[in-house]
Image 1 (cartoon, rainbow, N blue to C red):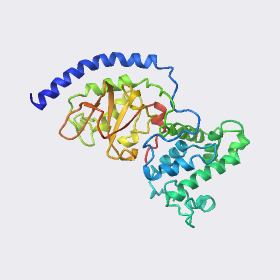
Image 2: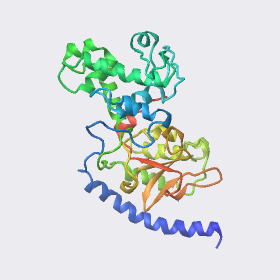
Image 3: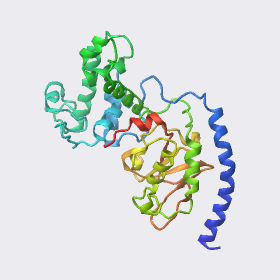
Image 4: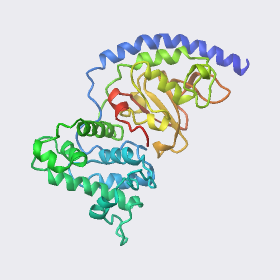
Length: 335
């Protein structure tokens, strides 16, 4: 039997199985609706590989500097600010992995590694400084009622005076959106401590991807008419979730942060599954597919191939994300 014929036979078998899988999907999400979300309370330790290995120990250590922050929250702030790029510089002159402006760095930068200098471009100084600044802000508003972390984030965005004045997060839409964005984003960096809530939109995303089976791959493809309706891997996953009103980022390594991360044995149909040659760094992710159950995904694998079913249990399997609407909205537009 030729490889092509073998693929067709396997495809027919899997397609038949998928019909059963699709019947199960709705039931799975209905009965699982009351599962406890896996990211709640506590110190929120980091999910494996969610922070580049070069910075993971720094984030884990300094993210426990005070009760108002956590490693996952600190990671979310760094990702939001720079995408973990230590050479990032904004048009507003914000610098480094934590995006300190010069004036704030001058007054709040610390010598995190004890080498005798304070270098905004050195993550060993900038990450401890970001944690220290967070905790300093938390101390300013510690007598304000409500959630200490949310008050700290509000002080970061609007100033401690505004938090004190309003007795909590001030009624500014920008500030409230910032607080929600960072706290939601922190869930994508936290190791779940229990089951992760299922996605209500998963079945429709799978249905969309299933209709694209057999479509030729196109590098950079997002399914436009000009591209002949063709996709690359992240273009397919982006389009599938867009049909249910969830706007994912364009590239796979940013899609990884669109929600919490179920373990391999907790995967449900509709979860995004990711692959990388560096299993210690989510920023190195190079491929994504949509899990359909039974150890298989639908994906757009590579040039010369078509959208198809592929197994997920390969040496380069990185992990999974259960996409949430709030998680997708929390992602920065550019990192």
